[in-house]
Amino acid sequence: MYRDNVNYSLSMPAFYEWRIAGLCILCIRFVQGWIFWGGGSRRFFYAPQKLNPYATQWMANKLQSAMPGALLGVGDVISFLLQHFYLLYAAIIVFSLVELLSGAALIAGIFTRAAGFVTVLLSIALMVIFGWEGGTCIDEWTMSVANLSIGLTLALSGGSIYSIDSWLLRRYPALADKAWFITFASGPWSYKTLKRTGILFFVFTVFFTLSTYNYYRGAIFSRYHPGPVSPVEYHVNLSDGVLSPDGAVTFTAYVDAGAPSQPCHIIRAELLNPDGTIIELWSGKQLSALPQNNIVNVYAYNRIKTGIYGIEAPVSAKANITLVPEIKFLNMVPGQYQLRLYSIDGKRWELTLRNSQIIHREIVY
Image 1: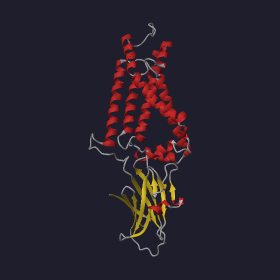
Image 2 (image 1 turned 180 degrees about the vertical axis):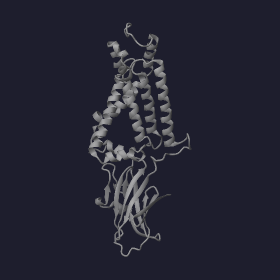
Image 3 (image 1 turned 45 degrees about the vertical axis):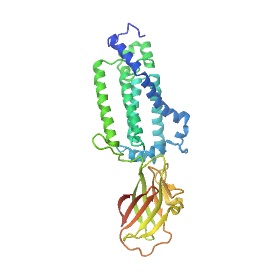
Image 4 (image 1 turned 135 degrees about the vertical axis):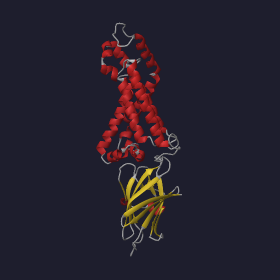
Protein backbone atom coordinates (compact mmCIF):
# COMPACT_ATOMS: atom_id res chain seq x y z
CA MET A 1 0.00 0.00 0.00
CA TYR A 2 1.23 3.48 -0.84
CA ARG A 3 2.01 5.83 2.03
CA ASP A 4 -0.92 7.99 3.07
CA ASN A 5 1.23 11.11 3.45
CA VAL A 6 2.27 11.21 -0.23
CA ASN A 7 1.32 14.50 -1.87
CA TYR A 8 -0.21 13.15 -5.09
CA SER A 9 -1.51 15.56 -7.69
CA LEU A 10 -4.68 13.50 -8.03
CA SER A 11 -7.27 12.66 -5.44
CA MET A 12 -6.86 9.33 -3.71
CA PRO A 13 -10.01 7.85 -5.33
CA ALA A 14 -8.59 8.66 -8.75
CA PHE A 15 -5.25 7.20 -7.71
CA TYR A 16 -6.84 3.93 -6.64
CA GLU A 17 -8.85 3.83 -9.87
CA TRP A 18 -5.53 3.99 -11.69
CA ARG A 19 -4.34 1.04 -9.59
CA ILE A 20 -7.46 -0.89 -10.56
CA ALA A 21 -6.73 -0.14 -14.23
CA GLY A 22 -3.31 -1.68 -13.67
CA LEU A 23 -4.97 -4.90 -12.59
CA CYS A 24 -7.13 -4.85 -15.73
CA ILE A 25 -4.14 -4.60 -18.07
CA LEU A 26 -1.88 -6.98 -16.14
CA CYS A 27 -2.51 -9.88 -18.52
CA ILE A 28 -1.86 -7.94 -21.70
CA ARG A 29 1.22 -6.31 -20.19
CA PHE A 30 2.69 -9.75 -19.60
CA VAL A 31 1.69 -11.13 -23.02
CA GLN A 32 2.95 -8.08 -24.92
CA GLY A 33 6.18 -8.27 -22.97
CA TRP A 34 6.58 -11.96 -23.64
CA ILE A 35 5.94 -11.58 -27.38
CA PHE A 36 8.76 -9.08 -27.78
CA TRP A 37 11.03 -10.72 -25.20
CA GLY A 38 10.49 -14.01 -27.05
CA GLY A 39 11.39 -12.45 -30.41
CA GLY A 40 14.68 -11.11 -29.08
CA SER A 41 15.59 -14.00 -26.78
CA ARG A 42 15.14 -16.60 -29.50
CA ARG A 43 17.87 -14.93 -31.51
CA PHE A 44 20.26 -14.19 -28.66
CA PHE A 45 19.82 -17.32 -26.52
CA TYR A 46 17.70 -20.15 -27.91
CA ALA A 47 18.23 -20.02 -31.70
CA PRO A 48 21.49 -18.10 -32.20
CA GLN A 49 21.65 -19.38 -35.78
CA LYS A 50 19.25 -16.53 -36.60
CA LEU A 51 22.13 -14.14 -35.94
CA ASN A 52 24.70 -16.29 -37.72
CA PRO A 53 25.35 -14.99 -41.27
CA TYR A 54 26.54 -18.45 -42.32
CA ALA A 55 23.42 -20.32 -41.14
CA THR A 56 20.31 -20.97 -43.23
CA GLN A 57 18.21 -19.40 -40.42
CA TRP A 58 20.12 -16.08 -40.71
CA MET A 59 17.61 -13.23 -40.28
CA ALA A 60 18.73 -11.53 -43.48
CA ASN A 61 16.96 -14.26 -45.45
CA LYS A 62 13.60 -13.40 -43.85
CA LEU A 63 14.25 -9.69 -44.18
CA GLN A 64 15.03 -10.07 -47.87
CA SER A 65 11.90 -12.19 -48.45
CA ALA A 66 9.78 -9.25 -47.24
CA MET A 67 11.43 -6.73 -49.57
CA PRO A 68 8.98 -6.91 -52.54
CA GLY A 69 5.94 -5.83 -50.50
CA ALA A 70 7.54 -3.43 -48.03
CA LEU A 71 5.73 -0.08 -47.76
CA LEU A 72 6.85 3.54 -47.97
CA GLY A 73 10.05 2.84 -49.88
CA VAL A 74 11.42 0.57 -47.15
CA GLY A 75 12.19 -2.04 -49.81
CA ASP A 76 14.91 0.25 -51.14
CA VAL A 77 16.34 0.57 -47.61
CA ILE A 78 16.36 -3.21 -47.23
CA SER A 79 18.05 -3.56 -50.61
CA PHE A 80 20.75 -1.11 -49.53
CA LEU A 81 21.33 -2.96 -46.23
CA LEU A 82 21.52 -6.33 -47.99
CA GLN A 83 24.41 -5.00 -50.05
CA HIS A 84 26.26 -3.52 -47.04
CA PHE A 85 26.89 -6.35 -44.60
CA TYR A 86 28.09 -4.41 -41.56
CA LEU A 87 25.12 -2.05 -41.63
CA LEU A 88 22.79 -5.02 -42.14
CA TYR A 89 24.26 -6.93 -39.21
CA ALA A 90 24.15 -3.88 -36.95
CA ALA A 91 20.50 -3.20 -37.89
CA ILE A 92 19.45 -6.79 -37.10
CA ILE A 93 21.33 -6.77 -33.78
CA VAL A 94 19.88 -3.40 -32.72
CA PHE A 95 16.33 -4.38 -33.70
CA SER A 96 16.60 -7.68 -31.82
CA LEU A 97 18.09 -5.96 -28.76
CA VAL A 98 15.30 -3.37 -28.69
CA GLU A 99 12.74 -6.20 -28.90
CA LEU A 100 14.45 -8.02 -26.03
CA LEU A 101 14.75 -5.01 -23.72
CA SER A 102 11.28 -3.59 -24.36
CA GLY A 103 9.71 -6.99 -23.76
CA ALA A 104 11.68 -7.51 -20.54
CA ALA A 105 10.74 -4.01 -19.38
CA LEU A 106 7.03 -4.71 -19.85
CA ILE A 107 7.21 -8.03 -18.03
CA ALA A 108 9.04 -6.42 -15.12
CA GLY A 109 7.02 -3.22 -15.31
CA ILE A 110 9.95 -0.83 -15.43
CA PHE A 111 9.58 2.34 -17.49
CA THR A 112 6.34 0.76 -18.59
CA ARG A 113 4.97 3.62 -20.65
CA ALA A 114 8.20 4.04 -22.61
CA ALA A 115 8.49 0.28 -23.17
CA GLY A 116 4.88 0.12 -24.36
CA PHE A 117 5.49 2.92 -26.83
CA VAL A 118 8.67 1.26 -28.10
CA THR A 119 6.61 -1.86 -28.92
CA VAL A 120 4.27 0.44 -30.86
CA LEU A 121 7.19 1.64 -32.99
CA LEU A 122 8.36 -1.94 -33.47
CA SER A 123 4.85 -2.97 -34.53
CA ILE A 124 4.73 -0.18 -37.10
CA ALA A 125 8.13 -1.26 -38.45
CA LEU A 126 6.97 -4.88 -38.66
CA MET A 127 3.80 -3.81 -40.47
CA VAL A 128 5.73 -1.73 -42.99
CA ILE A 129 8.17 -4.58 -43.67
CA PHE A 130 6.18 -7.80 -43.29
CA GLY A 131 2.50 -6.77 -43.27
CA TRP A 132 1.85 -7.99 -46.83
CA GLU A 133 2.89 -11.57 -46.09
CA GLY A 134 0.44 -14.33 -45.22
CA GLY A 135 -0.68 -16.83 -47.83
CA THR A 136 -3.95 -18.03 -46.28
CA CYS A 137 -4.77 -15.09 -44.02
CA ILE A 138 -3.38 -11.69 -43.14
CA ASP A 139 -1.47 -13.05 -40.17
CA GLU A 140 1.44 -10.61 -40.23
CA TRP A 141 -0.99 -7.68 -40.48
CA THR A 142 -3.06 -9.09 -37.60
CA MET A 143 -0.06 -9.45 -35.31
CA SER A 144 1.23 -5.97 -36.08
CA VAL A 145 -2.04 -4.11 -35.61
CA ALA A 146 -2.89 -6.07 -32.43
CA ASN A 147 0.53 -5.36 -30.92
CA LEU A 148 0.22 -1.69 -31.84
CA SER A 149 -3.12 -1.33 -30.02
CA ILE A 150 -1.80 -3.19 -26.96
CA GLY A 151 1.34 -1.06 -26.89
CA LEU A 152 -0.68 2.16 -26.99
CA THR A 153 -2.90 0.88 -24.17
CA LEU A 154 0.16 0.17 -22.05
CA ALA A 155 1.60 3.59 -22.88
CA LEU A 156 -1.61 5.06 -21.45
CA SER A 157 -1.86 2.90 -18.35
CA GLY A 158 1.73 2.40 -17.24
CA GLY A 159 2.47 -0.25 -14.66
CA SER A 160 0.47 0.73 -11.62
CA ILE A 161 0.66 -2.58 -9.80
CA TYR A 162 2.94 -5.62 -9.56
CA SER A 163 5.73 -3.72 -11.29
CA ILE A 164 9.10 -2.19 -10.55
CA ASP A 165 7.56 1.20 -11.34
CA SER A 166 5.00 0.79 -8.55
CA TRP A 167 7.74 -0.39 -6.16
CA LEU A 168 9.78 2.71 -7.00
CA LEU A 169 6.77 4.93 -6.27
CA ARG A 170 6.33 3.26 -2.90
CA ARG A 171 10.04 3.50 -2.13
CA TYR A 172 10.49 7.06 -3.44
CA PRO A 173 7.14 8.88 -3.21
CA ALA A 174 8.63 12.10 -4.62
CA LEU A 175 8.76 10.40 -8.05
CA ALA A 176 5.01 10.96 -8.30
CA ASP A 177 5.72 14.67 -8.82
CA LYS A 178 8.46 14.13 -11.41
CA ALA A 179 7.22 14.76 -14.95
CA TRP A 180 9.85 12.46 -16.50
CA PHE A 181 8.81 9.54 -14.29
CA ILE A 182 5.10 10.02 -14.91
CA THR A 183 5.72 10.31 -18.67
CA PHE A 184 8.15 7.44 -19.22
CA ALA A 185 7.57 5.08 -16.30
CA SER A 186 4.24 5.06 -14.46
CA GLY A 187 1.96 7.22 -12.45
CA PRO A 188 -1.61 8.53 -12.61
CA TRP A 189 -2.41 11.14 -15.24
CA SER A 190 -5.06 13.77 -14.86
CA TYR A 191 -8.36 12.96 -16.53
CA LYS A 192 -7.80 15.78 -19.03
CA THR A 193 -4.38 14.46 -20.07
CA LEU A 194 -5.61 10.88 -20.20
CA LYS A 195 -8.63 11.79 -22.31
CA ARG A 196 -6.66 13.92 -24.76
CA THR A 197 -3.92 11.30 -25.20
CA GLY A 198 -6.37 8.40 -25.32
CA ILE A 199 -8.41 10.01 -28.11
CA LEU A 200 -5.24 10.81 -30.04
CA PHE A 201 -4.10 7.18 -29.75
CA PHE A 202 -7.56 5.97 -30.76
CA VAL A 203 -7.66 8.15 -33.88
CA PHE A 204 -4.20 6.96 -34.90
CA THR A 205 -5.19 3.32 -34.29
CA VAL A 206 -8.30 3.65 -36.45
CA PHE A 207 -6.35 5.34 -39.24
CA PHE A 208 -3.49 2.83 -39.08
CA THR A 209 -5.81 -0.17 -38.99
CA LEU A 210 -8.17 0.86 -41.77
CA SER A 211 -5.54 2.31 -44.11
CA THR A 212 -3.23 -0.70 -43.96
CA TYR A 213 -6.11 -3.19 -44.19
CA ASN A 214 -7.56 -1.39 -47.19
CA TYR A 215 -4.16 -1.30 -48.86
CA TYR A 216 -3.48 -4.98 -48.31
CA ARG A 217 -6.98 -6.40 -48.73
CA GLY A 218 -9.52 -3.70 -49.61
CA ALA A 219 -13.09 -4.37 -48.39
CA ILE A 220 -13.35 -0.84 -46.94
CA PHE A 221 -13.08 1.71 -49.74
CA SER A 222 -12.80 -0.90 -52.48
CA ARG A 223 -13.68 -4.52 -53.18
CA TYR A 224 -11.80 -7.26 -51.37
CA HIS A 225 -8.59 -8.14 -53.19
CA PRO A 226 -5.58 -10.39 -52.53
CA GLY A 227 -3.18 -7.47 -52.16
CA PRO A 228 -0.95 -5.42 -54.47
CA VAL A 229 1.85 -7.92 -53.88
CA SER A 230 0.66 -11.50 -53.80
CA PRO A 231 2.03 -13.78 -51.06
CA VAL A 232 0.76 -16.79 -53.04
CA GLU A 233 1.16 -16.28 -56.81
CA TYR A 234 4.68 -15.85 -58.16
CA HIS A 235 5.63 -12.97 -60.40
CA VAL A 236 9.00 -12.55 -62.08
CA ASN A 237 9.95 -9.09 -63.26
CA LEU A 238 12.25 -9.22 -66.29
CA SER A 239 14.47 -6.33 -67.31
CA ASP A 240 17.85 -5.29 -68.73
CA GLY A 241 17.73 -7.84 -71.53
CA VAL A 242 20.48 -8.00 -74.12
CA LEU A 243 20.61 -10.27 -77.18
CA SER A 244 24.13 -10.88 -78.44
CA PRO A 245 24.87 -11.39 -82.15
CA ASP A 246 25.63 -15.06 -81.45
CA GLY A 247 22.22 -15.65 -79.85
CA ALA A 248 23.23 -15.46 -76.18
CA VAL A 249 20.61 -13.79 -73.98
CA THR A 250 21.46 -11.82 -70.85
CA PHE A 251 18.69 -10.46 -68.61
CA THR A 252 17.81 -9.58 -65.04
CA ALA A 253 15.12 -11.56 -63.19
CA TYR A 254 13.59 -10.33 -59.93
CA VAL A 255 10.95 -12.40 -58.11
CA ASP A 256 8.73 -9.65 -56.74
CA ALA A 257 5.76 -11.73 -55.53
CA GLY A 258 4.99 -15.23 -54.28
CA ALA A 259 5.24 -17.51 -51.27
CA PRO A 260 8.42 -17.07 -49.20
CA SER A 261 8.24 -20.71 -48.08
CA GLN A 262 9.28 -22.18 -51.45
CA PRO A 263 10.86 -20.97 -54.68
CA CYS A 264 9.36 -20.41 -58.10
CA HIS A 265 10.53 -23.10 -60.55
CA ILE A 266 11.35 -21.90 -64.06
CA ILE A 267 11.30 -24.98 -66.28
CA ARG A 268 11.56 -23.61 -69.81
CA ALA A 269 12.98 -20.64 -71.73
CA GLU A 270 12.42 -19.72 -75.37
CA LEU A 271 14.00 -17.23 -77.75
CA LEU A 272 11.73 -16.08 -80.58
CA ASN A 273 12.72 -14.22 -83.72
CA PRO A 274 10.81 -11.18 -85.07
CA ASP A 275 8.18 -13.31 -86.82
CA GLY A 276 7.41 -15.27 -83.62
CA THR A 277 9.28 -18.45 -84.53
CA ILE A 278 11.12 -20.23 -81.73
CA ILE A 279 14.78 -20.26 -82.72
CA GLU A 280 16.23 -21.51 -79.43
CA LEU A 281 14.74 -23.47 -76.56
CA TRP A 282 16.24 -24.20 -73.16
CA SER A 283 14.49 -27.11 -71.43
CA GLY A 284 14.33 -27.66 -67.68
CA LYS A 285 17.20 -30.11 -67.99
CA GLN A 286 19.34 -27.54 -69.78
CA LEU A 287 18.41 -24.78 -67.31
CA SER A 288 19.33 -27.04 -64.39
CA ALA A 289 22.76 -27.56 -65.97
CA LEU A 290 23.58 -23.85 -66.34
CA PRO A 291 27.13 -23.05 -65.21
CA GLN A 292 27.35 -21.22 -61.92
CA ASN A 293 28.93 -18.19 -63.60
CA ASN A 294 25.82 -17.76 -65.75
CA ILE A 295 23.75 -16.70 -62.71
CA VAL A 296 25.12 -13.64 -60.91
CA ASN A 297 22.99 -12.81 -57.87
CA VAL A 298 22.54 -9.24 -56.69
CA TYR A 299 21.97 -10.28 -53.06
CA ALA A 300 23.99 -12.77 -51.04
CA TYR A 301 21.10 -14.43 -49.21
CA ASN A 302 17.95 -15.57 -51.04
CA ARG A 303 19.53 -16.53 -54.36
CA ILE A 304 18.44 -17.67 -57.79
CA LYS A 305 20.15 -20.96 -58.58
CA THR A 306 19.81 -24.12 -60.62
CA GLY A 307 17.64 -26.94 -59.29
CA ILE A 308 16.29 -30.32 -60.22
CA TYR A 309 13.48 -28.87 -62.38
CA GLY A 310 15.37 -25.98 -63.93
CA ILE A 311 15.98 -22.62 -62.25
CA GLU A 312 14.89 -22.07 -58.64
CA ALA A 313 13.94 -18.47 -57.90
CA PRO A 314 12.85 -17.65 -54.33
CA VAL A 315 10.84 -14.55 -53.51
CA SER A 316 12.96 -11.37 -53.47
CA ALA A 317 15.87 -13.03 -55.29
CA LYS A 318 17.39 -10.97 -58.08
CA ALA A 319 20.06 -12.06 -60.52
CA ASN A 320 21.60 -11.40 -63.90
CA ILE A 321 21.21 -14.57 -65.97
CA THR A 322 22.92 -15.56 -69.21
CA LEU A 323 21.48 -18.22 -71.54
CA VAL A 324 23.84 -19.44 -74.26
CA PRO A 325 22.50 -21.31 -77.34
CA GLU A 326 23.89 -24.71 -78.17
CA ILE A 327 24.91 -23.48 -81.63
CA LYS A 328 25.99 -19.89 -82.21
CA PHE A 329 23.73 -18.00 -84.56
CA LEU A 330 24.91 -16.38 -87.78
CA ASN A 331 23.34 -13.57 -89.81
CA MET A 332 20.63 -12.66 -87.30
CA VAL A 333 17.99 -10.51 -88.97
CA PRO A 334 17.15 -7.13 -87.41
CA GLY A 335 13.91 -6.70 -85.49
CA GLN A 336 12.28 -7.49 -82.17
CA TYR A 337 13.37 -10.68 -80.46
CA GLN A 338 11.54 -12.08 -77.46
CA LEU A 339 12.55 -14.14 -74.47
CA ARG A 340 9.87 -16.23 -72.79
CA LEU A 341 10.15 -17.91 -69.41
CA TYR A 342 7.72 -20.56 -68.17
CA SER A 343 7.13 -21.58 -64.56
CA ILE A 344 6.12 -25.01 -63.34
CA ASP A 345 2.66 -23.70 -62.38
CA GLY A 346 1.85 -22.49 -65.89
CA LYS A 347 2.81 -18.81 -65.84
CA ARG A 348 4.67 -17.18 -68.70
CA TRP A 349 6.73 -14.01 -68.71
CA GLU A 350 7.99 -12.26 -71.81
CA LEU A 351 10.80 -9.84 -72.44
CA THR A 352 10.95 -8.08 -75.81
CA LEU A 353 14.32 -6.69 -76.93
CA ARG A 354 14.85 -4.19 -79.68
CA ASN A 355 18.14 -2.39 -79.99
CA SER A 356 18.61 -2.98 -76.21
CA GLN A 357 15.35 -1.07 -75.58
CA ILE A 358 13.13 -3.36 -73.56
CA ILE A 359 9.38 -3.63 -73.46
CA HIS A 360 8.10 -5.89 -70.69
CA ARG A 361 4.76 -7.62 -70.58
CA GLU A 362 3.36 -10.62 -68.78
CA ILE A 363 0.93 -13.29 -69.95
CA VAL A 364 -0.57 -15.60 -67.32
CA TYR A 365 -2.57 -18.66 -68.23
